[in-house]
Amino acid sequence: MKNMKNLCSGLFIALSVLFGQSALAQYPTKPIRLVVPFAAGGTVDTVARIIAPGLGDSLGQTVVIEYKAGAATIVGADYVAKSAPDGYTLLLGTATTFSVNPILYKKLPYNEETSFTPIGIVGSTGLVLLANQNVQASTLAELLKSIKAKPNDFSYGSHGKGSTVHFAAEMLWSSAKVNVVHVPYKGGAPALTDLAAGQIPLGFDAIPAAAAAVKNGRIKPIAVTTSSRSPMFPDVPTIAESGFPGFKMESWFAIVGPSGLPSDIQQKLEKALATTLANKETLSKLATAGIAPGFQPPGAYLPLVRSDIAKLKPIAEKANMQQD
Image (cartoon, rainbow, N blue to C red; front, top):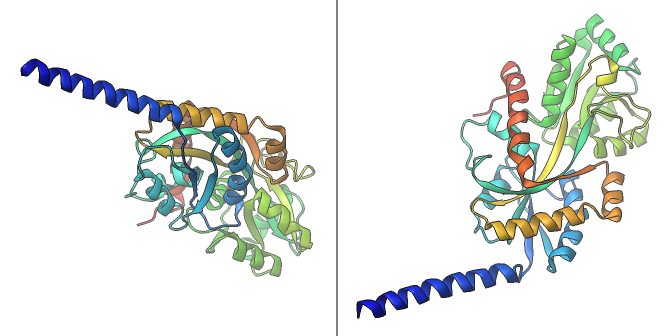
């Protein structure tokens, strides 16, 4: 009787392993949800819309974009972190999700290092220092000279306290040894509206949004935060080449799944993402949208997060960016 129980137990385990392997081999058997932790219409939504079809083609299933905006990406990130680790719920997060929020918030419902299984880095986009056309400066050197001469005349708008825009600005003002009043907005659109209207003289925004904003002729680009010039602003110098060597601030994008994702599924997803980001049409669409594509495998995720936090944490502390 005991031998029969052992035999049945062994058979059950063998069948479980067999069916488990079969399920992994068949993955995916239904549509995959790619969660965007922002409202529709922004830069991250654009990235998702560009890469989702390629991912779907590579995986043989539809990739559906799902929006779960709120609390600086925390709502969407928490949702994915608590989802079943079966490969059917993924997150397209940003540096805000993985590097900035852990600095700003004492308590997060997710952990940037342990709550996710990385699939790969998608790429990045830089920011642009912008000025209203009435500002009598065309270069960063001229602008800083004006700020030092009349500091009370200058303020800058951002997407909100603790945003990547806020970090980029404070990095620059600290490096230049100037103080500029911060005017936080609830998003980039209202900040750009006030910048164009002359309500604030300066602002920062992501390259894609900035490129659209300067077309109205009321806003001018001063410098970009990337390490090299942006194809969307080929005549605009970098902050690094404008007197601040080594200056770099970019927002990057990564796809992750919940912690505990089986390695077979992780590898399938990684391969699909790499294939998608090697496609010439996809690369062209990303570049046109102001995104610098740059696939990196899962192993690049943690080093990137940790280096970001080490670089940004002192800035947050100095500018008192921490949230409750």
